[in-house]
Length: 537
Image (cartoon, rainbow, N blue to C red; front, side, top):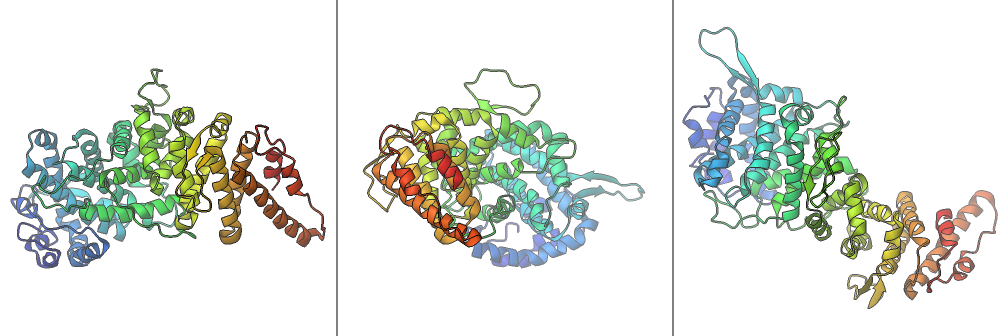
């Protein structure tokens, strides 16, 4: 790279990159680094340009993979970055653009190289490349230092300690990105990594004390949804649509990791990439989800999952449990608002599921909200547009409804919330309907879609379980919702009757139509037999 590079096409012949990947070791004190890190060219913001960058630099990366164990130039680059981050906080406070620019560029190169290294070797081989060996003439011994833990710890400190300003936005984003790339080792293993060097560093040693602060910072990055700063706020060039090359790199990596731990690759449709107004918020959320889903160590549970399971509201004055040193407090009102607004992305839906399922404080707070429709309506819209969503996104939305409908207070309150003009519901004009009736309509529509299209028995079972949870509290149902319950019951009974005839030859089966019509679905009376009916089918 260096000051002479202005486009991707020039990178293969760049003298500084050739020297970095060459056979000669470069000292961390060499003036070469100032020249290498003084580059400024338009970074790719789409997959086509990103592919061009990878193709342009593949020869350099291959050369560095081959020669780095002897030269230690990757270690020298990391040392240069580590030395510059020591002054980063002061540089941010003093508005030292040049210092932050070069630190950003160093991390940029490290992350690009790291992606190639991780895709081509095991963690053990990667550790060899990160081992810094300082040799002096005439000495027989060598002093070795493993730089992986030091770099990981430095990245975490950068995320939690550097104030988020216009001039620090990009380096904060790239620190989050680099951690995601570090954790992408799982993508290149068919089995779940249970003994990972990277995981061990993150869950033990110097990184462990930062657990709660890192989780809290990532959550607040998601809550605040800070937009990428406009052009002109940095010394280096930046694209107006935010993110740049490293955002593209990490988006691909994080999407792969997402597929690994949600099993979304089987029978799923590709979800169109949503416009990311805040790449830092999106990457922070992805990193948080990956950290929370790391495998427990043999002797220690995952501390990041423990932090997510135990954090409390800032208004909660009760003492923290001594059994969990990673607990912290966060503003639940701000978190709730962000969760309501961001449900169009499947990663935000997964975060909501995790919090409702694993954090009792969040679940209690959500169920006590008087504006629960702000959360439920986006979830129902996901289920309504089931044809356009990935299967794992639909499953998460449905499981969230299952968790909510386990609470009798929720099942009662949704029939008291009156909605007007639901524009996204196209089958019928709904000028006024209760939230409970709308929920019933959407779940039944999902059941019918599943019966005619996907035929997924687990989706079918979960939909019926949600209806069974709610059925004891049905009241003042919309006429259209009552009609849909009856027609769905008839269809399910016909399907069940056909299966029974095939298995046993019997031709008689219960008459659900008569059973349902005996109930006062439109009045204030509860449908006493509905729970048993939905559980039976």
